[in-house]
Length: 365
Ligand code: EPS
Image (cartoon, rainbow, N blue to C red; front, side, top):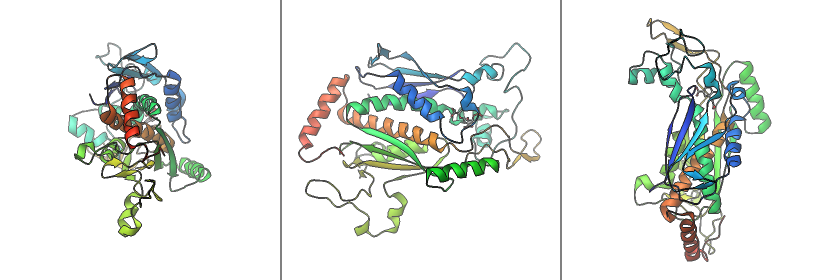
C-alpha cells in the first residue's frame, strides 16, 4: 500500500486532522520531534499575531501504540486554540444562541490572490468565509506533522531533509530579509520569497521514468505546488538550464560514480541519481493586505476594497518548514515504493540489500 495522506479541518474550526496510511509497523515516533517541527513552522519573522494564540502540538488518535506505529492508519490532530473565539462563527451545527464572536458577520469582499472569489463561485457559497477557512495556509500545520513522521522513516534510511529560506522580498541575506520584512510591515504591505530544500543520503533509483505519476520530480512539483501561495518550483538549476548549452547543463560522471556538479539537483529522468536532492519553491506575497486592493462587494455588486484582516507580513520561513515536510513525505513515499514492506525491519532489510547490490558503486552523499 502506497504512503498516502488525507487532511481535514478549517482554519478556525476545532482542529486540523491528517490520516497517514501505508506506514510500516514498528517505526518509532517521538512526540517531541513532531512538536519541534510544529513550533519551527510557527516561528518565522513576520508572522501574524495569530501565532501568539496558537501553540501547536500533535495528538495521535490511531495507528500508534507506546510510541511505535502499528502499520494501521495514523491519525494526527492539531487543535486550533483560536477556535474558542469562533464557537458561534464556526459551529458545525446551527447555533441556538444569537450571533457572537468572530465569524458572526458574513464576508462579501473577496481578496484578490486568495480563494475567495473562485471559491464562492465554484461552491455556491453566500459567505466567503466558507471558502477561505479551508483554503487558509493554517492547515499546513498538519502537513508538517505528517512530514515529521516521514522524516522519522527517512532517518532510519540515513536520509536527512532540510529546508531554509533563500530569498525574502528579493533580499538574500538574513539581515536583508529582516529589513525587507520590517519595511513591508511599515508600509502595511506583504512579501513573498523563495525556499530551498536539500535532501542528503538519498540512494539512486527512487522514483521512476516508467510512468509520469511515479517520476520523483513530478511528485515533488505536485507536493510543493500544492502548498498555499507557491507559484513556482524548480529542481537543481531549474529554469536557468534552459539558457545554457548541453555541455554546460549536465553533470559528468566520474569513475567512482560521483559527479563534479549537481546541476540536475539529484534527479535525472524522474529518478534520484545519488547526488543531494535540491528543490526550490517560489511563494507569492500573501494576499491578505492591510492596504486592500480593489475588489467587488458580492452583495451589492459595487466596487469596494477587499477584506482587511490580520495577516502575516511574510511566511517564507514557515514555507521552508512546510516544503521540507512535503519533500520528506514524497521521499518517504518513493522509498517505500522501492523498499516497502509491512514491517520496518523488512524495509530496512530491503534497504540493506539494495545498498549492498549497488554499494560498491555508490556511497551516500
Ligand atoms: C492565513 C491567515 C492567518 C494566518 C494563517 C494563514 O490566519 P488568521 O486569519 O487567523 O490570522 O495566521 O496561518 C496560521 C494560522 C498558521 O498557523 O499558519 C491564511 O489566510 O492563509
